[in-house]
Image 1 (spheres, one colour):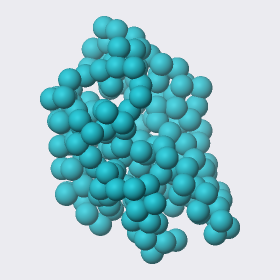
Image 2: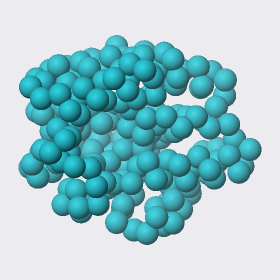
Image 3: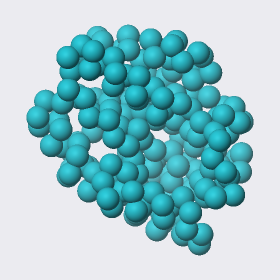
Length: 200
């Protein structure tokens, strides 16, 4: 099973992913916990570039993310799924649609094609969207906005990102679960677990 965790800055994806991994392992499940951009040497390099390199065009940003994703699927996600592991991934295709499509206002058709090439048919069985307003998320996020291009974008950008996530969730409710990320951590975990437990 492949589960993606999505949401804006400060939503708590990493915290939830770690808690879910621990709970799944306590039920004797093999779990791979990974993230994007990251999970591979190329992904880590791309993460540094897109977060800190000034002057990147939106198109360059998109293609860097997709290159990292293609390597990530090839090296980490597909092999884990073929072994029968459960993959928990902090961000995946939906992030690109939300950030580069809605946030940067690039063509959604072009992004869909780039995603298709990168993932070669590997898509999440379930996407957990941790939803909260950008103002709340940015207050929670301790990252220095001056040193992080995406974190430092204005409120309007992050509002568009949130709208992009919610549009994707509304279009595919069978494979998405929207969770109120302003709840206590235990409530967020229980909401996610109730959906996952029904699947595993």
